Length: 215
Image (cartoon, rainbow, N blue to C red; front, side, top):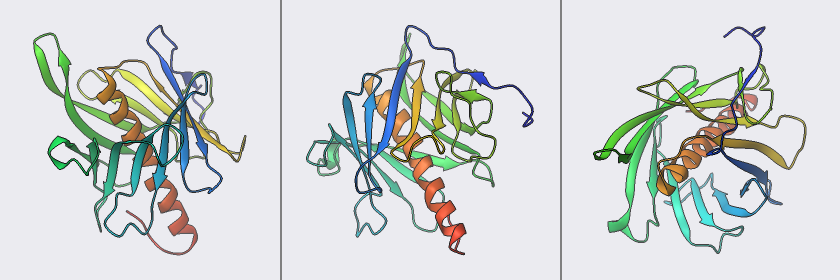
């Protein structure tokens, strides 16, 4: 869509969920809350991991909460491993691949098992950079690389989005909207994949500004 195209907000329905993303005092980690500001996840990010995940979701608003999910950035690769569960319980982890589907980092894909009318099925989902689909009335900036829509790969239906907050607030980073859910694991994977793309984008921008590169 061209920069002059009108912004099309993601419709808010009876099943829509809004999640707000805030920087913590460290300015490196995040707090993710529900629409009413109830804490959902403390999002811990690590650059120097020493074998630990780059992203860890802790239940609640501190790193003392139970580990719910993790994201590992594969070295020298644009692929990430998304894990549902606590890595300390190896046998209970469910892993999926998040892959970059375009050279310009504008399209990412993962798939997972979700409930269906016949039991369960594998479905693919895409995150696509957008300047037209905004969360709950937000207007995505055409100058930002941090706005994405979340799409059903097969039907091309827009299921959700992430909209960057831009310069409106230093603390508030943006917000997610999810209109269709296949359960708690799907909701977590939606957020984890979106946060992974966002963190990778932030690191890539920082590396570019410092004269380096980034996957």
